[in-house]
Amino acid sequence: MDKTKIKNFFDNWAETRDIWLKKNRYYHKNLLNLFSFNIPENSTILEIGCSTGELLNNLKPSNGAGIDISSKSIELAKNKYPHLNFITDDIEVLRLNERFDYIIMQDLLGNLTDLWQAFRNFKKLTKPETRIVISYYNYLWEPLILLAEFLGLKNKQLHQNWLSMHDIENLLYLNDYEVIKKGYRFLMPFYIPLISDLINRCAANIPLIKNFCMIQFIVAKEISSSVPPSVPPNRELSVSIIIPARNEKGNIEELIKRIPDLGKHTEIIFVDGNSNDETPDTINGMIKKYPQKDIKLILQGGAFGKADAVRKGFDIAKGDILMILDADITVMPEDLSKFYLAITEGKGEFINGSRLVYPMEREAMRTLNILGNKFFSMIFTWTLEQRIKDTLCGTKVLLRENYLKIKKGRKYFGDFDPFGDFDLLFGASKLNLKIVEMPVSYKERKYGITKISRFKHGLLLFKMAFTAFKKFKMNLC
Image 1: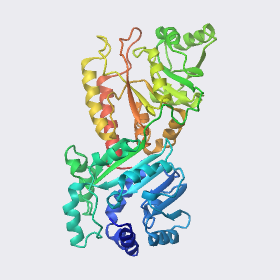
Image 2 (image 1 turned 45 degrees about the vertical axis):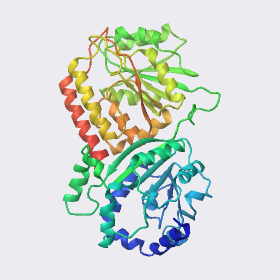
Image 3 (image 1 turned 180 degrees about the vertical axis):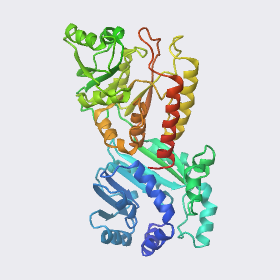
Image 4 (image 1 turned 60 degrees about the horizontal axis):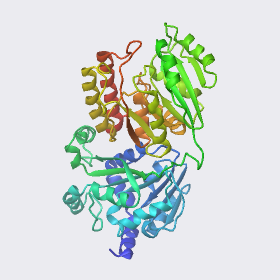
């Protein structure tokens, strides 16, 4: 399509933009919810195809910029939002060369003449930690969109490129970007009191039915290089290993002996949860016995639960990388070296252990627990729109800087998780961190008893699954 024709079309359309936003405010409000869920406030954001700037302004960036081929749209955007930076530019022949935390494209792909070149030009705008958030019409809706235009329910648009989700993924891949998250939204894009929200928040999330939603979206990032940006060249990172422990006296020394030295320094932090089997005394004895190791003990105090123990350990940890390891030695401590390599080689940003790959020792996990874990794996994989094979493996690894971001956004989900696993998984998913699973061998406990109650904690898992559904699928506060 001729670029002059495209420019003239959007110059003419700019004057009526506010009218159409008001007329279709339910659709645009929900689209804003989609973007704001995936983009924290006070991020640096570039909107490509920003039109007159409403979406960018509503995302509350610390540094916001918008580009559009329409000079008239840019002129109006500058007048409406003088605190933001708007530039007449074209993503296909991009002049801008500045890096941002987030790049967004709202319903733009249909108007581009060279999609490959547009995606190629992302390289001028992204850094390894940048997230690209794209929304676009599901091509199955083309007849209904044309009908809505004919009836005057929607502004007319130029002849569109109609792209499937696979087409968009493939174009990103060809230009060295990988998809972290993808999904569908809006079975009913217009407002009928009660009915629209019920359909969009419930029916639109049902498998198979969701494929008929109007909007498809993708969150992507640069394909990881061999070393992530947080690992400076020729320098290893330090590691803090957090070990919640309650009545684990018989496991302490073996744990300390088997934990490998990782990176430039390894810090081992035990958090004792009011043990009554002399676990704290044993740990203090090991601190004296192994002075060459950096071992610390903190007492959890009045609070109980693994989540509180992990948070208290993370709060005093000094390492660049934070690791959680259960004290029962059912996951081999030696496997932590694999987690270290996975995160320092840039394979993922949140490394989650998975016990459901290798054969388990006979008494490691009861059959009912295995079935329950697989059931919740399917639920959380669907809800978070990232593959989670083992939700309750106690071994999890992430960069300290990413944990601080999760901690900062914790108020969105609330204090709902006694385990700590879901607090981290939900937070990582909301931040669009790349979650990668590391298979681990799962061994039978040799000392002590399990702290998991199948039925009591099973009910808690259902509660957390519902919390995830509300927050991720229904976007309810």
